[in-house]
Length: 389
Image 1 (cartoon, rainbow, N blue to C red):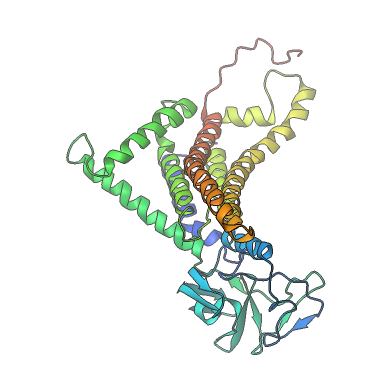
Image 2: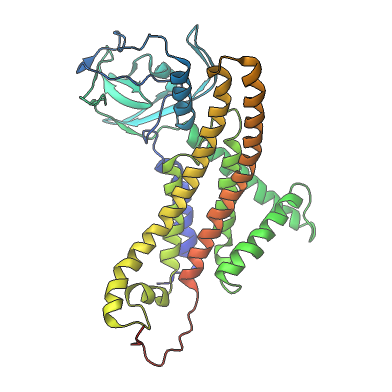
């Protein structure tokens, strides 16, 4: 099945427009302050009563683990740094958007990092481990035997830290490429920052798009390939800043990006592509029946490999860097641990800069490869399809 340029562009525009919403705030989020995971033996715990072990002093290793978990998760506000002694967080809140018997919009400052109950239009909400639950005025949360809250969760469309980061990168991409397009009106050679973008665009065209898709059809997909490359690359670089952003280390984001490639591939595929999947040419009929479900499964494993590769590599890089920094606080010999920890952190950070580019390149390259497999024309020179293998 082949679709024209206009429907394809419409589908892409709709998917990109919905991408911030697709990464819901309640998808495995964590609050901006370090939440203490404890086993809850009681079925009902009041907001005013402290959780078991909440105020007990944590050992340095437990604090490090909690801090790494916090860094990897999304949150409802930006926190630049915190004062544990005075229990103060310095940053700025983000808007919370809930659907609970109507639209509820309020600032995340009302939740105060899960320490207070937000009263909105007669309803009460509390933040527990990064997820917003409906509660009462006392902040009562009911837990099951596994320590998971059983309270009702309203539908959460909040503008979280990851969503803000994606919107920022999207605006940045728009300004970059519109500026490059305007610079070409002045002459064949771009000016300003366009001189930096042009070699990268030519690289993606000559080394990724044309070899994998072909000279006749590559232009149709250049817009998507350029967008996904720069989008992932800039988000990866943004994740290396002290802002604590880990967008591409969020499984919901990588699933969304892989879904774009999957949809484009399937809607752009020609009849020969589907013929190879459902009725493999050149093999005996019994083998065709066996290969068909395997090929169908292969159409799903390809985007799965995309999302897992990006998610695992970026998450692993963040964990390694945070663990190396934690050596300073866990080790007892500061004079010996500080130089080693900072030296290894600097070395891994330099590698992470390369990984940020490499993961964007691999995702774009594999996407173009999958698209190319779907749109390429196959030449068959079989005298008889029932060839014995």
